[in-house]
Length: 100
Image 1 (cartoon, rainbow, N blue to C red):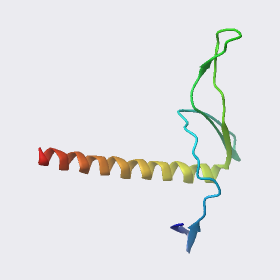
Image 2 (tube, helix red, strand yellow):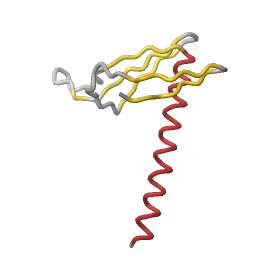
Image 3 (tube, one colour):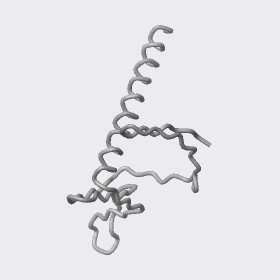
């Protein structure tokens, strides 16, 4: 099990993560709908040709509804993860350049 720390306002809580499912679905296309109270994110692996008429269709395999505040938190976490990944890649590239 993984451990994470949640800090929100003055409260801090440590949680153990328990994955109910460990499978993952790949998504490269997203359709997002937002109103004042919620954000709905639709996930797709990509467009496919419709054999009936030749149009492209986007099959949605997963849909997640979030509160507006939850969507902001998710966006921040994704940005943090990408920033950390980019920083790590930059350090690894610098190391590989010094080794060559």
